[in-house]
Length: 94
Image 1: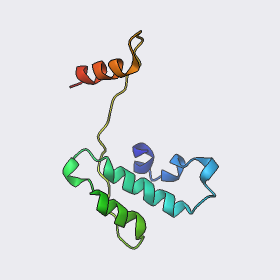
Image 2 (image 1 turned 90 degrees about the vertical axis):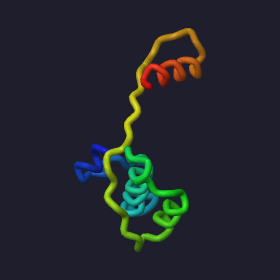
Image 3 (image 1 turned 135 degrees about the horizontal axis):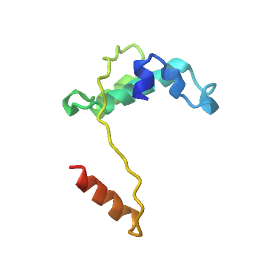
Image 4 (image 1 turned 135 degrees about the vertical axis):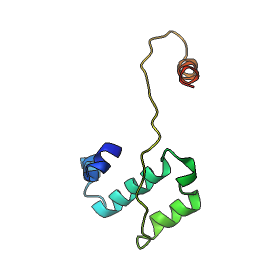
């Protein structure tokens, strides 16, 4: 989503199955707000009440999102329960 946003191709992220369900501008606004919510710096992320305002009022001008925090996922083969594997991988990355 971030790469497409930076390339000014946010519409490339929209599932073709729902493209006609609502306006493209509404979908892009949702994507924009979503990117604001996952910014690297937590202090710049909007509060939930601000998110509700942003989604409910299209006249509010949204700030440009900054680079999101990235999570790195690895595929690990294991006989352990999935929750144990996720916990172990998360621990290794801290």
